[in-house]
Structure formats: structure tokens, C-alpha cells
Length: 248
Length: 282
Image (cartoon, rainbow over all chains, first blue to last red; front, side, top):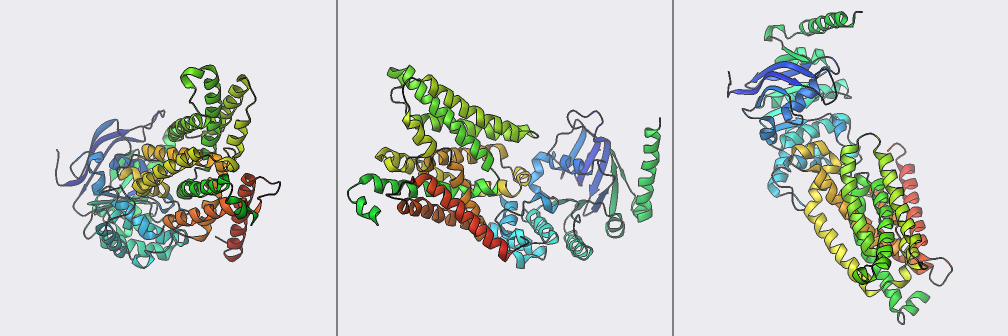
């Protein structure tokens, strides 16, 4: 049943990479409504990043129905903020944080050498929302991984997104910075639905509203099940079935 | 000072200086993108494939003197460099693994074709040497006009495309999500590299073009921290490098073209060494 209120609505999604026999995602369902904060967990190679790529329309699925903000993913790309791992931005590029965040405004106009005053104001506001305004003029080569990650969140925010997708934002960031990052995200979540891929089960189970386990299929945990024990049970169940497959 | 004394009576000397300054605009503007987006190897391939175009132009002009009598070797170089830029942009997008092997193959095959076609053309081709190693001593007025024109095209294109180029340098996937055609933008950038190669041909020659495209920009990269500043500083550095060594070696046995490249290399190494001593980690 199509539902226009759903932020994300995936039904029976199957996606295979070209030349691979086993699908990366198979018959997957996922729904996200309101201002949820969904953690995507699961084993490496289980399809978490692929799921984000499907949501961004970067890859085309073979079967199933995918709706983001009520539309096909490629149509609403500019309304979705995507935050890659901080390593996605080349730190050797001679640019400062403001330059990076302004890239989030490119879809409005990308011709000519300079951004408009409106773009700059929006970019500065985005830096402020992630607590990095004082870094605006700092070169990205001199920033820590955590600072760069927050600048990338600001880049996504600069486009005024209606949904935020993050791919393992806490990778390579120390515990203290991770807390800072999380509080920025929780604050943003008061206005924005967020989907975050994470390896950090403790973080997901303690702070996030809901959780889905991605391992070719997607199992969404009921709110009452979102606990470290609940998530770990899914990994164990998976390992059990894995052993069956591997058997002689 | 002998140089300035002779300049009054010899228009070629002044023109050689102008040629160096005009080349500085092209390589100062394009070099920083080449270094930042790590296109140095692709730029080298474009320059050497242009040798194939020079060979083809000399060969065709000889075979079809009536139809192609007006064909200059530099036209062949320009056509083949631009074609190489378009093909290499496409190849780089599609190839994935083994890209460097493929670029190396195109690089050497392009050059081999040029050498072969010149061997097949009767006559002794001294002009080839001036394309391979530069010829600052004999820059004609048409050379200056051509450089001015190409500089204009390069500067205008960069003004229009700067933000797209920067997006590509920073994070190509994000650029794609912002609705920017990554392949098309990369093609435009490589065509600019091809045009810059043509501008630089007379100043240092196709073989040494890569030095002026990469060294001044890389030197600037050590000194400033934003791309526009890097462009301005690169233009200034190129202007010094294409004039000062030329004036210093004037009247001696050294030709100016390799002196320019050696000076560019020396300045780069000196700046890199000083930076390393001040910031041992970075």
C-alpha cells in the first residue's frame, strides 16, 4: 500500500552488481516515517552501503519498489543530504571548510567562478549547526578526521535536505569526538529524519530510535527490541545460518 | 644585461619574452587543477600523443601538397592533443584497474606514430626538433597571436567551470549527486590541458611540457592553501621561470628551454625541502 507520508518506502528490493551471481540485496523491505533516527547495522559486505546507494539513485535496482520522499530516488537526490566517510574528501586539495560546504549548494548553480552571497550565508549557517563555524577558513588538510566529518555533515545540510543519510560517520574517530558527533546528529534529528550506517552496536542501541539489520535481506527491529542484546541476537542468528550454508 | 641591449635591435628577443609570459598564463591557470586532481600522468600522455599529430601533419602535407599545403605541424599537434584529451577522459572513467598501463600504451604509441610518419616523409626535418624541445629564439608574430587566442579560451573556460572543477577535485561522487556530469567536466578539463600543451610547445617543447604544467603549481601548493591563490601564485612563478633563466643564459652555450625546466625543478625542490624542515610531519 503506497503511503505518501513515508520518508523511505522500500518493498521487495533486489539488487545485484553486474557480473556477480549472488544479489547484494534480496527481497528487502524498509520503511521510515516521521523524524526517525534509523541505524543500519550488519556484517561487512551485507549490503548496507549498497542500500544507501539505492536510496541515492547511484545504482539502479533490478526488482522491487523504492520511494524516497514519495518519489523515485534520482528525482529527489537534491532533497537528500548524503554524508560519506570523511575519507571521501581528498584532504590534499587546497580548500578550506567553507569551500567544501559550499559544494553542497552546487545543484542550484554551478556556472561561474564564485558562489552567491545567499549560498555563503547558507553554508555558514550549516557550519554553525555542526559546531564548526570557527573552522570555516581552516584548510581541510589541517583538520582531524572528526572535524572533517562534521564539515561533511555541514555540506549535506547546506542543501537544506529533508532526509540525511550517513555512511559510518564514526569510523576513525576517537571516542570523545564520537560523542560530539552524536550530539550534533541527535540535535539535527529534532527536525530531520536520519539514516546512519554504523558498526558501533553500542552507539546504535543506546541512542538511536530504531534499527535495521542488513544482510542481503533487511530485518527491522521493533522499538522494544533495539538493545545491544537484541542486535547481537541478529548477528548470532545470521552466523548460525551462515554455518549451515558453509557446511559440506 | 647584454640581453636588454640586444633586445632593441632584435624583435625575436622581445617576442620570446612575450611567449614566456603568455605561456605562464596558460600553465599557471591549468597547472593547479592538474596537480590537485592528479592528472600529471594524463597530461604527459596528451603531450606525447601530440607528437603523433605533428608527424601526421608533416606527412600529410608532403603527400597532398595541394589540398593540405597550409597544414602546419602545430595544427596536427593541436588536433591530436584535443582528441587525446577526449579519449583519455573517457578511458579514465571506464577503465578502472589497469588504467596506468593503458595510458602508458597510448602515450608511447602516439609518439611512435609521429616518429614513424616523419621517417616516411622525405627530407630533413629540423622543425621537428623545435616542437620536441621548444624554440624560444624564433617565435613569430603568428605564434604570439595563437598563444593569445588560446590563453583567452583557457581563462574564460576556467572562469565558467571553476566551481565544477573544484567539486571534481574534492569529491567526484558528491559532484555527481549535485547533478554535475563528471565525465563531461573531466573532458573539458583535459581539453584545457591539451590547449595548454599547445601554448607551451614553443616555450619548452612537447617533451618538457609536463615540467611547467606540474612544477610551478606543485611549488605553489606548498605555499598557499586555496586553489584560487594557487593559480595566482603559479602564474607569477611561471612568469619568473620563463623569463629569468632565459635572460641569464643569453649569449652562453646553454639553450633557454632546458634552463627553464631545470630552474622550475630547482625551485620546487628548494620549497619542498624548506616546507619539510618546518613541518616534518605534513
